[in-house]
Image (tube, rainbow, N blue to C red; front, side, top):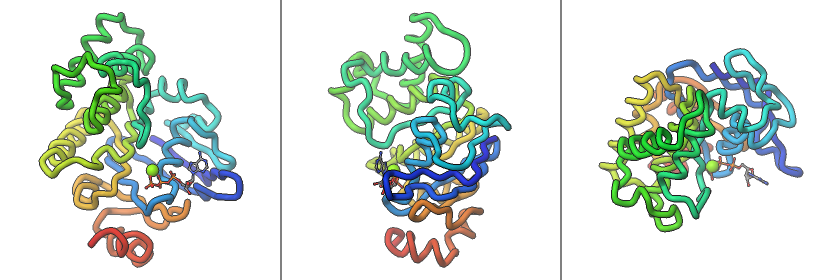
Length: 241
Ligand SMILES: Nc1ncnc2c1ncn2[C@@H]1O[C@H](COP(=O)(O)OP(=O)(O)OP(=O)(O)O)[C@@H](O)[C@H]1O
Ligand SMILES: [Mg+2]
């Protein structure tokens, strides 16, 4: 569904993503892990068109999307959540999700339709109904993430890129989030997720890819990747205790 070949991104002298080859298959949940600064978020930013690769090519269903703007990539059905941003602080949770519904993939919807869809999605994701019309600047971190996920879903994606959606969730919220991700996949979505919580990513991923210093160092079934010595040395030894 998505094919990256030799994708490279530099920031000044730093090679954040270095000649990465990666394939994402339709209907899978792909886990993307690696130490801090490995280039995971940069890879998502390249796929979604926030950055353009310095080298290499990104294809979506066979079409080269490496040079397309991010709004065109979104309208083709690739949506992502952001690791760190508080986008649109002045908008309410509902309004920020409506942006996805109004400007995303697929037909244009009326404001009323977008508003209803935003409320339904937020509800499905467990967003507290009494806070839906409050500004994002007054929402807590977990509810901001729910809003981001709802906004991404409102754009009706085919591929969903999730950047550390689960950080800071308690175990029961984590279990709910995993169930939600599985149900999204069962509805036909393809999901790539960056996650540091090993218990979660191992349990939910069909396949895992490990990045280290911009390079892909492992790619395969979770159980196999976890036995890989390079992965243990560069990542697990440090984090999975
Ligand atoms: N816009 C930018 N300008 C300059 N350097 C950047 C920029 N974005 C990322 N970097 C650098 O690129 C490298 C990869 O960063 P990236 O955010 O992709 O890592 P990551 O794997 O997502 O890490 P984390 O687990 O901490 O989120 C880091 O050294 C980072 O400092
Ligand atoms: Mg990151």
